[in-house]
Length: 362
Image 1: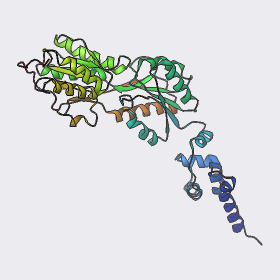
Image 2 (image 1 turned 120 degrees about the horizontal axis):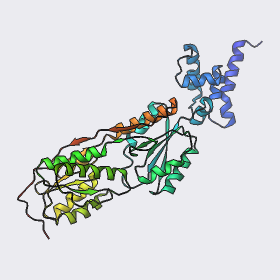
Image 3 (image 1 turned 60 degrees about the vertical axis):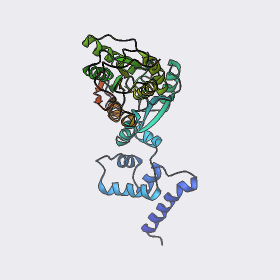
Image 4 (image 1 turned 90 degrees about the vertical axis):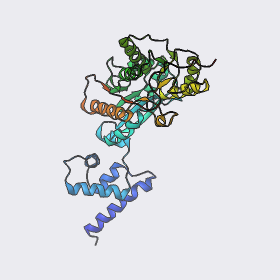
């Protein structure tokens, strides 16, 4: 005669062996069967729902441990009716300018119970952006986070499927899409004002690529500070965020006798500037003061250490994820534009204007 305990044990063994016999990993259904509960109850336990009784919660967690079950995103979607994946659109470029906000994104998403799927744009044009947005949308993402601060992105986002929540990082403060970013204009204005306060009659500028939104914002901040001081605004030099472009701009600027201060659009271009000035016999900061933008990890180790504008990319990423999840889970449709303040870091690459500067060589 077989006891009920023996029957229960045999059933449990059969349930545990089922995934292996089928050649597949254990599923939420297997967990439910072993714990003798519904798969909806398993889902509530895995998502931390407070309505589950302690004994039931222990039974489910015990079954999860015994089976070695790992909840997949697909399973969560089937059970809850909502994807737990957030799509992230980024620029696939050699420079890291567009990727730095990723620092705070993955960690913040994980804390809120979401996965992150990344789609890289390999060309800065409307067709490429649209294609990547389309690929991410086809993956049943719950929402889309965009880190592509270029003009083409704004046009391409018009093709996003209706109802898909979208938040853009550094996407400009206009339009119907919610945005999170650093106040680039304020950062550039502060950098320029710092140089003017040191007695420099004007400040030259090496800007980034024209299609980048930060380029225009930093250009506006630079011009605003010069206008307010009644200083002449020299023609900006054009760079592409790389140290090489800063170096090439520096070779030209070093030939200008009136040059005493330069605001570079980012730290890498500032690095190139400083090398070019050194090769032309100009000392930083005794002859020329240099300010960068970003405060990358290596900025304190330039020679001399770089005065720059610090951007808290982790805070930007965290705020963007929180905003996107609020739209996903709460259905919030009101457009929001959040600007975080940058921090100005003074180091040794800036000094009072040298009115006795010897003209550059050549």
